[in-house]
Amino acid sequence: MNKVVQKVGVGISTVAIMVASFAMPAMAANNGTDHFGPFAGSSTDGGSCGAPWANDTFNRFFSVHDNGDGTFNVTEDFKDGTFTTIGPVSPSKCETTDSHHGTTVLAGITGSLQGSESGTVSSGTYNPNGCSAIGADCTTTAGFIAAVFGPTASFNVTSFNFEYNSSDQSLIYHHWSDKYNTGQGVEQFIGDIANQ
Image (tube, rainbow, N blue to C red):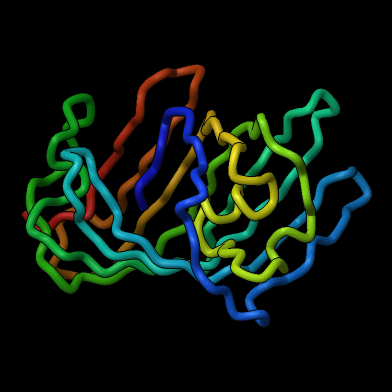
């Protein structure tokens, strides 16, 4: 996944047709948080070198909480995820603070992934039925923000945590973690998915 650690503006160029059965209406919870999903998604995943290392598939789930000041906390969960490596660079090859990593990964290695990211949406108008609108595409983060908060909304990611595991016996490293928190101010790569 292309994780973002900066403020992201959602432009109106994100256009796709969404199958009506994909859209699950928001469900209001007792604590004032609305839940959306699942939305099937896929993405190329970037590693510590900035190069793609795997193709991911997953289900996206979103939670939206009104902060009462015109902003909203949004949490996006990635569940039922899988990855397939594309090689040759392992995801942690360019990591400099964790010595427990390799350099290369063969194409075709499979494994599981799960993760979440959280942040704040501002400069938008909340429409909990936005994913049901004709032309809405809630299968991407940018598409969800545009559909539910409008094309002028921005999503400032404050933290994320993604975990990857593979039981493939050809690997010397079977677990990789990609984390970010604004309190730490730096993205952390721990471990690796690597053959060498």
